[in-house]
Length: 241
Image (cartoon, rainbow, N blue to C red):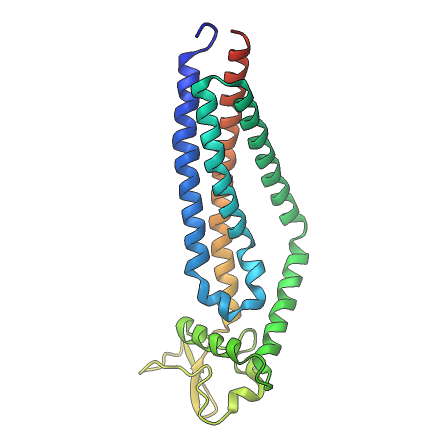
């Protein structure tokens, strides 16, 4: 043990166990929860699912990788293996670089992403207006979303449904409240319909998920930097034995 600080060694071990194994489990579990909890929105807006869940899928992968790295770091510290510690350091550094790169690219290409998202919404509107029967399943799923979120259409309310809105016995966008509130419902033709477009609901959900993802990513970056410092310090101390 000459030349190797017990404090550094066990700090590295404890750091990896609590912050990587446990943190990895939390990130993985929470990301899967976000992914699964919004299944209905994905089904109703299948055209936008790639955009909505790209960040969540990335977090699932990161959580799994963190668990593996945590195991590698714990073993490297316990066995005083320079090889394991260097692998841990390199992998952690690559993840940090990828996170920073992803953040920069997201900021730089934000207008293009928003434009692509708007085009995707327009495509979804065309699916709502279709009368060929090709998108029947999608339309039914979207009506479930409307009832759940108390919204109507994607961008322009009932106009997004085209001729489908006026079909006999159609209950599209119909406000199902016993006493329709002016905050939620408006009079349209011979019935009350929900006032808010579902596009606003989808955008808000994306923003909420992005805030969570950004918060986790920022906290993760801080922990990663600490991991880099711990692993390299221990690596150097072992080399001086």
